[in-house]
Image (tube, rainbow, N blue to C red; front, top):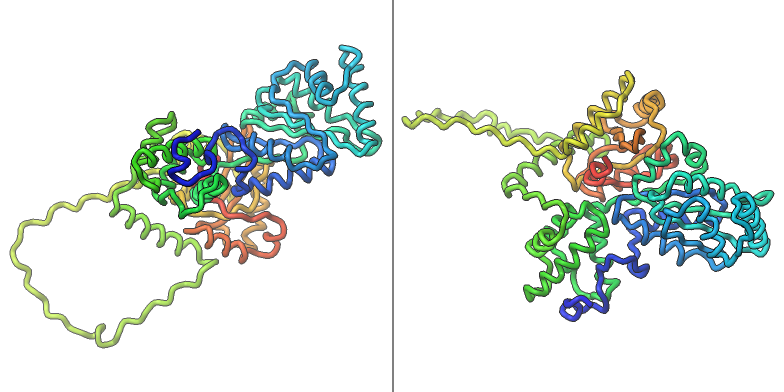
Length: 465
């Protein structure tokens, strides 16, 4: 048990890394993804894929899904996806208390189908949840495709949900698995948490563990933790647990940046980037304000220039003779702003070719520029993401878009998915999530109906590259 429980008034450890469904955080689209998964399972939606980085919450999502499915749904959880092709049938049969009479694959498949038909006739549904699916051999994935073909005259007999790391997307992109890829009806991704979501996540976990006081984690401590963890929930849990222990050892009831730094040093994560000096924060904020004001003409009213008073304008000031002085020192050049994109991110971004499409090439250049400079805590509006990265198709979208919105505020982010790309289309730059949400309500009605518009931080957008 954690040493700090009594010190902070907790009933149980709030940041265990093992999935505990009472601590399921529904923010960062987790709740919406869960509802979509339940709908897909209950409405014969074929194969569903959930992918995400290590520690982004896939296993937690899987466990909560198992708990929240109705009683008439039989769940089969496969945590060892490296099973050979022939053994996966027997593993499924074992979970259904079915003994297959033959080792022959065709006979075993027929027996399994007959058993599933009987279950369906009795009002039972069967869903297979395959965790760590990125580790499945290709021949086993092919067996999964064959299992998805099991059906009665009108209904699928098995629903299959694949949970895996991004390598699963790369594997499914292979030509040899085209048939399986075509059977995936829904794809979800557990994205990293933004800075604002990290703060909400920490507060949620603390209160789920019994804490009843004011927020323990100082804003700067949250900022350091978000940067060091990359928004991945497993890393957040590790850092938060160690930071609480450091605060307990320090005999304080709040978590300060020094406690998070101690936690980071004790972990094998990337070091926290040193913060800018205070005067640079002021300059950066001012520049960001100017940029946002210039870039958001569609959403805010232009400022009215205040007229100069007549008396002040006509006043004559006597020139003052300058006193002799030493020559002024040479003006120091302004420090170059630190680029927000890493070399690898810039390389992946440049790997997508607009193939001669003029508007798309312009928007890709603008996208690269805004990703280089935008603050982590600024927001854009997600319009949509598509796996169809055909440049001509995106050019047609941009041609239509310029009739509805200012095209200079539309950004197209190419995200490498194995040998292919998917395109993430976002709109604008806003200093807060509230401003972004307000702007979403002013989008053309056609966009509000066609797209599931939502704010995305630039930290998250860069993290997807």
